[in-house]
Amino acid sequence: MPLVNTKEMFAKAYEGGYAIGAFNVNNMEIVQGITEAAKEVNAPLILQVSKGARAYANHTYLTKLVEAAIAETGLPIALHLDHGDSFELCKSCIDGGFTSVMIDASSKPFAENIEITKKVVEYAHDHGVVVEAELGTLAGVEDEVQVSEEDSSYTRPEEVEEFVSKTGCDSLAIAIGTSHGAYKFKPGTKPQLRFDILEEVSKRLPGFPIVLHGASSVPQEFVKMINENGGNMPGAIGVPEEQLRQAASMAVCKINIDSDLRLAMTGTIRQFFAQHPDKFDPREYLKPARANIKELVKHKLINVLGCDGKA
Image 1 (cartoon, rainbow, N blue to C red):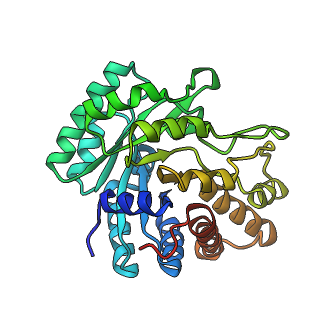
Image 2 (cartoon, rainbow, N blue to C red):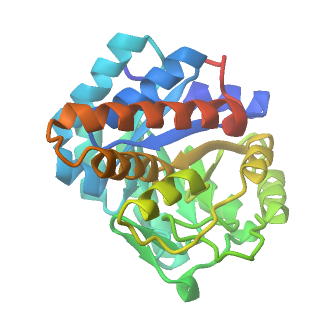
Protein backbone atom coordinates (compact mmCIF):
# COMPACT_ATOMS: atom_id res chain seq x y z
CA MET A 1 0.00 0.00 0.00
CA PRO A 2 1.41 3.44 -0.91
CA LEU A 3 1.22 6.57 1.22
CA VAL A 4 -2.24 8.15 1.15
CA ASN A 5 -3.41 11.72 1.54
CA THR A 6 -5.99 12.75 4.11
CA LYS A 7 -9.04 13.46 1.92
CA GLU A 8 -10.77 10.12 2.41
CA MET A 9 -9.58 9.85 6.04
CA PHE A 10 -11.12 13.19 6.93
CA ALA A 11 -14.38 12.55 5.08
CA LYS A 12 -14.88 9.33 7.08
CA ALA A 13 -13.80 10.97 10.34
CA TYR A 14 -16.21 13.89 9.91
CA GLU A 15 -19.09 11.57 9.15
CA GLY A 16 -18.16 9.14 11.93
CA GLY A 17 -17.58 11.68 14.69
CA TYR A 18 -13.96 10.81 15.40
CA ALA A 19 -10.53 12.30 14.69
CA ILE A 20 -7.33 10.99 13.14
CA GLY A 21 -4.21 11.11 15.29
CA ALA A 22 -1.35 13.14 13.81
CA PHE A 23 1.78 12.07 15.65
CA ASN A 24 5.14 13.81 15.27
CA VAL A 25 8.04 11.50 14.46
CA ASN A 26 11.78 12.01 14.87
CA ASN A 27 13.39 8.55 14.85
CA MET A 28 12.80 4.85 14.27
CA GLU A 29 11.62 3.97 17.77
CA ILE A 30 8.93 6.66 17.75
CA VAL A 31 7.69 5.52 14.33
CA GLN A 32 7.63 1.91 15.52
CA GLY A 33 5.81 2.65 18.77
CA ILE A 34 3.11 4.67 17.02
CA THR A 35 2.52 2.30 14.13
CA GLU A 36 2.59 -0.87 16.23
CA ALA A 37 -0.14 0.64 18.41
CA ALA A 38 -2.22 1.61 15.39
CA LYS A 39 -1.89 -1.85 13.87
CA GLU A 40 -3.13 -3.50 17.07
CA VAL A 41 -6.28 -1.36 17.15
CA ASN A 42 -6.65 -1.02 13.34
CA ALA A 43 -6.49 2.77 13.20
CA PRO A 44 -5.56 5.08 10.31
CA LEU A 45 -2.61 7.37 10.94
CA ILE A 46 -0.98 10.65 10.06
CA LEU A 47 2.75 10.67 10.73
CA GLN A 48 4.01 14.21 10.66
CA VAL A 49 7.44 15.75 10.42
CA SER A 50 8.38 19.23 11.57
CA LYS A 51 11.05 21.38 9.99
CA GLY A 52 13.26 20.61 12.98
CA ALA A 53 12.71 16.85 12.72
CA ARG A 54 13.54 16.96 9.04
CA ALA A 55 16.79 18.80 9.78
CA TYR A 56 17.63 16.35 12.59
CA ALA A 57 16.85 13.01 10.98
CA ASN A 58 17.10 13.82 7.24
CA HIS A 59 14.18 13.83 4.80
CA THR A 60 15.16 10.55 3.13
CA TYR A 61 15.58 8.59 6.37
CA LEU A 62 12.20 9.75 7.66
CA THR A 63 10.30 8.97 4.46
CA LYS A 64 11.88 5.51 4.27
CA LEU A 65 10.96 4.81 7.92
CA VAL A 66 7.34 5.69 7.16
CA GLU A 67 7.38 3.55 4.02
CA ALA A 68 8.71 0.67 6.14
CA ALA A 69 5.88 1.21 8.62
CA ILE A 70 3.33 0.88 5.83
CA ALA A 71 4.98 -2.34 4.62
CA GLU A 72 4.89 -3.76 8.16
CA THR A 73 1.35 -2.70 9.10
CA GLY A 74 -0.64 -2.39 5.87
CA LEU A 75 -2.35 0.66 7.39
CA PRO A 76 -3.46 3.79 5.52
CA ILE A 77 -0.79 6.31 6.54
CA ALA A 78 -0.37 9.90 5.40
CA LEU A 79 3.01 11.66 5.61
CA HIS A 80 2.51 15.29 6.61
CA LEU A 81 4.70 18.36 7.01
CA ASP A 82 3.90 20.04 10.30
CA HIS A 83 4.18 23.85 10.49
CA GLY A 84 5.81 24.51 7.15
CA ASP A 85 6.94 28.12 7.34
CA SER A 86 7.62 28.87 3.67
CA PHE A 87 6.59 27.96 0.15
CA GLU A 88 10.10 26.59 -0.45
CA LEU A 89 9.90 24.14 2.46
CA CYS A 90 6.44 22.95 1.43
CA LYS A 91 7.59 22.52 -2.16
CA SER A 92 10.60 20.48 -1.07
CA CYS A 93 8.39 18.12 0.94
CA ILE A 94 5.86 17.81 -1.89
CA ASP A 95 8.63 17.04 -4.37
CA GLY A 96 10.09 14.59 -1.84
CA GLY A 97 6.99 12.41 -1.55
CA PHE A 98 4.94 13.90 1.30
CA THR A 99 1.21 13.47 0.72
CA SER A 100 0.13 16.40 2.91
CA VAL A 101 1.71 19.69 3.95
CA MET A 102 0.84 22.46 6.35
CA ILE A 103 1.67 26.02 5.46
CA ASP A 104 1.60 28.09 8.64
CA ALA A 105 1.39 31.77 7.78
CA SER A 106 -0.88 32.48 10.76
CA SER A 107 1.55 35.06 12.17
CA LYS A 108 1.14 37.16 9.01
CA PRO A 109 -1.64 39.67 8.34
CA PHE A 110 -4.84 38.07 7.04
CA ALA A 111 -4.31 39.09 3.38
CA GLU A 112 -0.70 37.89 3.40
CA ASN A 113 -1.72 34.59 5.00
CA ILE A 114 -4.17 34.10 2.13
CA GLU A 115 -1.55 34.96 -0.48
CA ILE A 116 1.10 32.58 0.87
CA THR A 117 -1.37 29.75 1.50
CA LYS A 118 -2.88 30.04 -1.97
CA LYS A 119 0.55 29.74 -3.58
CA VAL A 120 1.25 26.53 -1.67
CA VAL A 121 -2.22 25.13 -2.43
CA GLU A 122 -1.84 25.68 -6.16
CA TYR A 123 1.50 23.85 -6.28
CA ALA A 124 0.35 21.06 -3.96
CA HIS A 125 -2.89 20.37 -5.80
CA ASP A 126 -1.00 20.18 -9.08
CA HIS A 127 0.95 17.32 -7.50
CA GLY A 128 -1.95 15.51 -5.81
CA VAL A 129 -1.02 16.73 -2.33
CA VAL A 130 -3.43 18.24 0.22
CA VAL A 131 -2.83 21.38 2.27
CA GLU A 132 -3.58 22.34 5.85
CA ALA A 133 -3.57 26.05 6.73
CA GLU A 134 -3.99 27.97 9.98
CA LEU A 135 -6.05 30.91 11.23
CA GLY A 136 -5.44 32.21 14.73
CA THR A 137 -2.22 31.69 16.70
CA LEU A 138 -1.55 29.25 19.53
CA ALA A 139 0.68 30.21 22.43
CA GLY A 140 3.62 27.99 23.34
CA VAL A 141 6.85 26.55 22.00
CA GLU A 142 7.35 23.62 19.63
CA ASP A 143 10.52 23.47 17.52
CA GLU A 144 10.54 26.67 15.44
CA VAL A 145 7.04 27.71 16.54
CA GLN A 146 7.37 30.18 19.42
CA VAL A 147 4.39 32.38 20.32
CA SER A 148 4.02 34.29 23.58
CA GLU A 149 0.71 34.26 25.42
CA GLU A 150 0.35 37.97 24.66
CA ASP A 151 0.71 37.34 20.92
CA SER A 152 -1.70 34.40 20.76
CA SER A 153 -5.19 34.92 19.40
CA TYR A 154 -8.38 32.90 18.95
CA THR A 155 -9.58 32.18 15.45
CA ARG A 156 -12.20 34.65 14.26
CA PRO A 157 -15.11 32.65 12.79
CA GLU A 158 -16.13 35.56 10.57
CA GLU A 159 -12.87 35.15 8.61
CA VAL A 160 -12.94 31.43 7.87
CA GLU A 161 -15.24 31.39 4.85
CA GLU A 162 -13.27 34.04 2.99
CA PHE A 163 -9.99 32.38 3.89
CA VAL A 164 -10.97 28.88 2.74
CA SER A 165 -12.67 30.09 -0.45
CA LYS A 166 -9.74 32.29 -1.48
CA THR A 167 -6.97 29.82 -0.63
CA GLY A 168 -8.55 26.50 -1.57
CA CYS A 169 -6.97 24.80 1.45
CA ASP A 170 -8.18 21.29 2.33
CA SER A 171 -8.26 21.59 6.14
CA LEU A 172 -7.95 24.39 8.65
CA ALA A 173 -6.16 24.53 11.99
CA ILE A 174 -7.93 26.85 14.40
CA ALA A 175 -7.08 28.31 17.81
CA ILE A 176 -9.70 27.55 20.47
CA GLY A 177 -7.58 27.32 23.61
CA THR A 178 -4.96 24.62 23.04
CA SER A 179 -1.26 25.51 23.18
CA HIS A 180 2.04 24.08 21.98
CA GLY A 181 4.50 22.32 24.25
CA ALA A 182 4.33 20.65 27.65
CA TYR A 183 4.04 23.89 29.63
CA LYS A 184 0.39 24.56 29.02
CA PHE A 185 -1.68 25.61 32.01
CA LYS A 186 -0.73 26.31 35.61
CA PRO A 187 -1.88 23.90 38.36
CA GLY A 188 -5.16 25.03 39.85
CA THR A 189 -6.50 26.34 36.57
CA LYS A 190 -9.23 24.60 34.63
CA PRO A 191 -8.53 24.63 30.88
CA GLN A 192 -11.64 25.06 28.78
CA LEU A 193 -11.66 24.85 25.02
CA ARG A 194 -13.80 27.42 23.20
CA PHE A 195 -16.41 25.11 21.77
CA ASP A 196 -18.50 28.14 20.87
CA ILE A 197 -15.82 29.12 18.33
CA LEU A 198 -15.62 25.57 17.00
CA GLU A 199 -19.39 25.41 16.61
CA GLU A 200 -19.51 28.73 14.77
CA VAL A 201 -16.66 27.72 12.47
CA SER A 202 -18.37 24.42 11.64
CA LYS A 203 -21.63 26.25 10.85
CA ARG A 204 -19.79 28.52 8.43
CA LEU A 205 -17.81 25.62 6.92
CA PRO A 206 -20.22 22.65 6.94
CA GLY A 207 -18.46 19.34 6.35
CA PHE A 208 -15.03 20.97 6.29
CA PRO A 209 -12.26 19.26 8.33
CA ILE A 210 -10.90 21.24 11.28
CA VAL A 211 -7.53 20.60 12.96
CA LEU A 212 -6.36 21.07 16.55
CA HIS A 213 -2.70 21.74 17.30
CA GLY A 214 -1.15 21.79 20.76
CA ALA A 215 -3.47 19.03 21.99
CA SER A 216 -1.14 17.01 24.20
CA SER A 217 -2.51 16.25 27.64
CA VAL A 218 0.86 16.13 29.51
CA PRO A 219 0.64 12.68 31.16
CA GLN A 220 1.58 13.18 34.79
CA GLU A 221 3.10 9.70 35.18
CA PHE A 222 5.86 10.69 32.76
CA VAL A 223 6.36 14.12 34.31
CA LYS A 224 6.77 12.32 37.64
CA MET A 225 9.28 9.88 36.14
CA ILE A 226 11.33 12.79 34.83
CA ASN A 227 11.28 14.72 38.11
CA GLU A 228 12.07 11.65 40.21
CA ASN A 229 15.11 10.91 38.08
CA GLY A 230 17.01 14.17 37.87
CA GLY A 231 14.58 16.40 36.00
CA ASN A 232 12.97 19.64 37.06
CA MET A 233 9.75 20.05 35.11
CA PRO A 234 7.39 22.62 36.61
CA GLY A 235 3.93 21.35 37.38
CA ALA A 236 1.70 21.67 34.36
CA ILE A 237 -1.55 20.25 33.09
CA GLY A 238 -2.56 19.75 29.52
CA VAL A 239 -5.79 19.78 27.56
CA PRO A 240 -8.35 17.53 29.31
CA GLU A 241 -8.85 14.41 27.24
CA GLU A 242 -12.62 14.53 27.56
CA GLN A 243 -12.59 17.93 25.87
CA LEU A 244 -10.48 16.56 23.02
CA ARG A 245 -12.92 13.68 22.60
CA GLN A 246 -15.77 16.18 22.44
CA ALA A 247 -13.93 18.16 19.77
CA ALA A 248 -13.34 14.94 17.83
CA SER A 249 -17.06 14.22 17.90
CA MET A 250 -17.70 17.59 16.25
CA ALA A 251 -15.89 19.05 13.24
CA VAL A 252 -12.32 18.28 14.36
CA CYS A 253 -10.90 15.56 12.10
CA LYS A 254 -7.19 15.79 13.00
CA ILE A 255 -5.62 16.18 16.43
CA ASN A 256 -1.86 16.72 16.75
CA ILE A 257 0.11 14.94 19.47
CA ASP A 258 3.82 15.56 20.05
CA SER A 259 4.74 16.60 23.60
CA ASP A 260 3.14 13.49 25.12
CA LEU A 261 5.42 11.32 22.98
CA ARG A 262 8.49 13.27 24.06
CA LEU A 263 7.53 12.98 27.71
CA ALA A 264 6.98 9.22 27.40
CA MET A 265 10.37 8.68 25.79
CA THR A 266 12.32 11.03 28.06
CA GLY A 267 10.67 9.83 31.27
CA THR A 268 11.32 6.18 30.43
CA ILE A 269 14.96 6.75 29.53
CA ARG A 270 15.62 8.81 32.67
CA GLN A 271 14.10 6.08 34.82
CA PHE A 272 16.10 3.37 33.06
CA PHE A 273 19.42 5.09 33.70
CA ALA A 274 18.51 5.82 37.32
CA GLN A 275 17.85 2.11 37.82
CA HIS A 276 20.72 0.86 35.60
CA PRO A 277 23.53 3.44 35.76
CA ASP A 278 26.06 0.95 34.37
CA LYS A 279 24.14 0.20 31.16
CA PHE A 280 25.22 1.74 27.87
CA ASP A 281 23.52 -0.26 25.09
CA PRO A 282 20.99 2.07 23.34
CA ARG A 283 18.77 -0.90 22.56
CA GLU A 284 18.24 -1.56 26.25
CA TYR A 285 16.82 1.89 27.05
CA LEU A 286 15.12 2.57 23.72
CA LYS A 287 13.13 -0.67 23.89
CA PRO A 288 11.12 0.30 27.01
CA ALA A 289 10.79 3.85 25.67
CA ARG A 290 9.25 2.46 22.49
CA ALA A 291 6.93 0.25 24.53
CA ASN A 292 5.64 3.20 26.57
CA ILE A 293 5.07 5.24 23.42
CA LYS A 294 3.05 2.32 22.04
CA GLU A 295 0.83 2.14 25.13
CA LEU A 296 0.35 5.92 25.17
CA VAL A 297 -0.67 5.96 21.50
CA LYS A 298 -3.11 3.05 21.95
CA HIS A 299 -4.78 4.99 24.74
CA LYS A 300 -5.06 8.09 22.53
CA LEU A 301 -6.41 6.18 19.53
CA ILE A 302 -9.13 4.45 21.55
CA ASN A 303 -10.10 6.86 24.34
CA VAL A 304 -9.35 10.31 22.92
CA LEU A 305 -9.56 10.14 19.14
CA GLY A 306 -12.09 7.31 18.79
CA CYS A 307 -10.49 6.10 15.56
CA ASP A 308 -9.78 2.50 16.58
CA GLY A 309 -11.23 0.05 14.09
CA LYS A 310 -11.50 2.74 11.41
CA ALA A 311 -8.52 1.85 9.18
